[in-house]
Every structure is written in C-alpha cells, then in structure tokens.
Image (cartoon, rainbow, N blue to C red; front, side, top):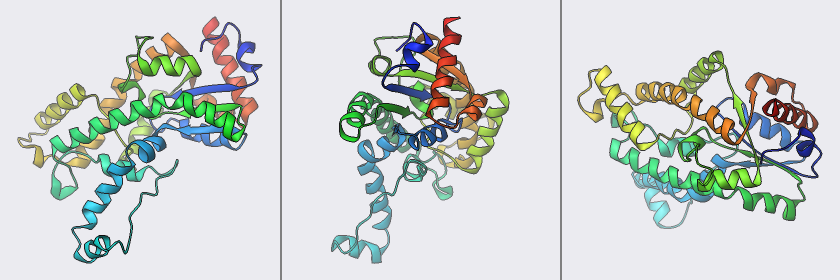
Length: 288
C-alpha cells in the first residue's frame, strides 16, 4: 500500500502495517506497545515457532530427552509430555533448534544439519508471511481489531526478491499492508552486535551467503575441518557480516514498496495516535 496523501492512511477506518528491519532495532517493542492500544500484534517469529516449526522444535526436545534413560522411559509410557513455551518475547526454543554450526563438543551442529534446519526455516518464514492477510481478517472478524501490525523477523529480506512486485510475499504484504522500514544508525548496529553476542537470536542465511561466509570464516581462522569451528565465534562473526549485507537491501525494499523511519523516532511513540502520526510523516517524506 502506497498512499497519495498522509491523510489517506491516517484517516482510514482501519490500518495494517508490516514493520521490518534488523533484529533488535525495536520492531517487537513497537508492536507490543501498540498491542496495549488496541492493535492486533502478529509476530512472524512466533508463528514460525508455533505453527510452522513447532513440531520440529518439540521433536528436537524429545530427541535430547530420549538420551536420558529416566526421561526416555517416562516418554515411552506417556507419563510425561514435552512442549515448547515460545512467546513473543522469548524465542529461545526457535533459537535452540536452529542452533549454530561448528564443534559438537561446544554445542555446535554439523554443517549439513544446520543447512537442513535453515531450509526448514526458509519455508516456514515464507508461510508465516503469507499468513498475514488471513490474520488481518481474523483480527477483525474474531476479535474486533481495526488496526493490525505485522512484526517481522530480521530475515524477511532473505526470503523475498525486494525488486520484484510479483514476488509472492512482496505481493501479499504490499496488497494488504503498508511496509515500514525501521532504520538504525551505525551506532545502533554496534549495539545490536553486542546484544547478539550476549543473547543470540534465531538467524537465517541465504544458502549461497552461508556457504561463502562459512568458507571465509574457516580460512580467516585457519580452521580446516567443519567440526573444529567455534560455534559462538562463527555466530557472532556471521551476524555482523549478515547485518551489513542486509542493510542496503532493507533500504531498497522501502524505496521500492514502502516507507522508512529512523529507529530513534520510535522514542516519540507512546500510543496508537503517535504511531499514526509517525506513519503520516513517513508518507509525507516519501511524497516529497
């Protein structure tokens, strides 16, 4: 949705916005705040971790539990059950399943297994993004919400063609929502990198990019075998490389199909009216 005037959006009886940008830039904070002001919060990562990858995650928990004889006997007799307690604010079950490639003794996954789980995530993320129009209708019909915000993961840009309006995900999102890029500064990027090192989030890499960066990391660190790679070291290094690779593509998506605000502008948003005002300014800026 691109608008002729800011009032065309602001004065509409209902609003639907998809926010995108790097993980940790403020998308979930914004959506959670708006939820308290009668906006329906659709979390793409939550949808991935429950509907589209929930069985993979729980099966992985069970696989680990079956290694413990006491738990194995209880599972086989249906005396206990295992579930994932994923929430909008706690994506650890999804992060633990996706994992990081490298030395198994340091918690890493074999590279081929990591690639397999990455492909599962790619399929799941596309499905969760294509669910957005359905949830806009559900939010209205079932719960009476006129306003809707889709809180996307940082890897949105990895599963679309940001130059192609006929891309299925781009077409679905632009037909039913206004796209808003929350753009950080270089200083924000450094904070995100530090935050990721302290608390890693689920990461998805384009297949070719992953293979290239995996080979580059091994070469830079003099590592010959996949199983000798430090998972934490590659995770932090890969996140930084991915961050810088994604930033220009986020901007291109906004230039092609949406709007852009700076992450610092979120500090002015305290409720739904403030957010509509911020969107109005972004629309006016694009018109200029």
